[in-house]
Length: 621
Ligand code: AMP
Image (tube, rainbow, N blue to C red; front, top):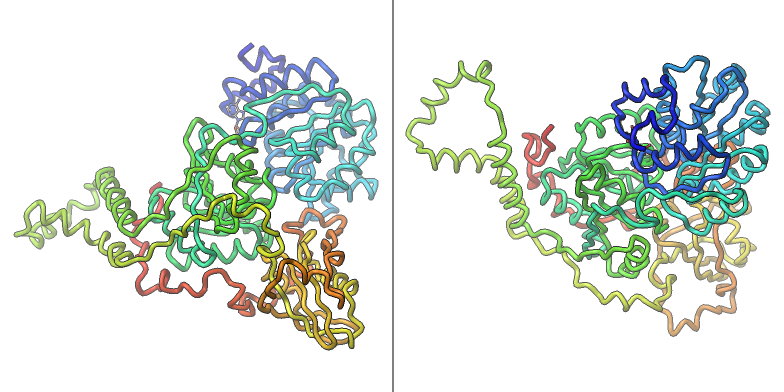
């Protein structure tokens, strides 16, 4: 079997596929389409993004759908609105020659009444994000009693994003005799447990290797200090003048900050994160897709809906919390037979995080040195020469000026001319990188990290202006921290309650968020002041069981954000309340100690940075 026709699809679908330029089925399509058409058996598919899985589940559903029956026959759940919209659009394209087929996409952040009206008109296929889907079920607008197919797309990502409850709720209300199709790039315990609990003897199919990184992707790491993370990112971009890639950050704030810095420093970059409006996000994605943007700085969640197949690099500005997310990130490069590079910028403290990823992707990371100024200049020079070689001369436009150009350059020989033209651009980089410092950090052995307490390494210690006299105890302090909804399950470390003030430790990755979340907070009518303070020296861990309340038993996790129907907005787990407060205050209130790399202004002072406006260092389209 090698054609779509042979897979059992009708002429209307085949015609639409021809219009879309789909000539031969991909591996996952070859395996899934005939299986779903011919059998009701549940199906578990290991499929990376970009393998053609949307068509793999949509086409057999369209083939088998009863277009005369207006009730919802297929429900497709997807982790983000971007992906849901993309799937909805794909299905519309696939079914454009089929009569009476209605597809509706439902997601948070859009007018629910419009979606309810759409459902009332009758949609045989509903594509939705988990939060909004549950909301519509609860309002009795979305009825799933006649559902024949339940499709979970990117199941691992949905669970990573904390949609377990929503998935459970949808799975509970769908009929037992439906066919469940579960697609996931990775199969961590949580996904296996969904499969075990809700699927009946599923058949397993695989496109590509299970849980492995894409074969065309080389994984590299650079060891830097925290303050050199950003300068190293710039050097990597400068050393790769044709970079077309995504820089992944962990939080929305970090994403916005890195993008802002890159833009200020003259790079062709922009940010994609959940604080942007849908229209802004669409605009950024469009610019990136059509190559007018070279570097996209994004959170994992926001980048989910982006379908770009020719990325040269994926850069992990910070490694993701979940190992699975690394697979998703790196799988965005090395597609369509092209080679790709996935880079991790790590500090010595983060070295221990490489090994579990290596185990998961079944590949080794290669250690790389942050490029020196000299190396960058060389790469830029040869890139410039290539640009010159490839540039076509537009005689219509330039011929009228040539006479006077020739006469003003008279007296320069060929070599001198070449040297001067090249130097116009090259001097800027040369000047910028002359005497540049070495950004590489000596690598500590990976095993040094083993046994080191997470708390020592990854916690920030905060001062809070409340103590026993304010009726504060460790339980109340944990409650107060949770109330700020800093992020999902933020780890709380040691707590020390004193008479008039106290200390607590929190995951240092959320230092910024912690400070800003506490702004305006109150405790028993008193305004709360939280500041970063110096870490306490620990002697053999003995201080943990502090009699005054700061004991390990008091360690805890932040409350999970339970925003009901607004779950689609979650990203890093912060509530919208905090987000809007933060937006109102703008960025000026950020403490310099929390800002990455502010101290290193020397590497990006505008006066001495290379001017990229002439196209040098920009992507050529
Ligand atoms: P997906 O994994 O479904 O997101 O698909 C990845 C990309 O491949 C999308 O741009 C699809 O339109 C495209 N695609 C999927 N299947 C095929 C096919 N059989 N032939 C050509 N392009 C395809």
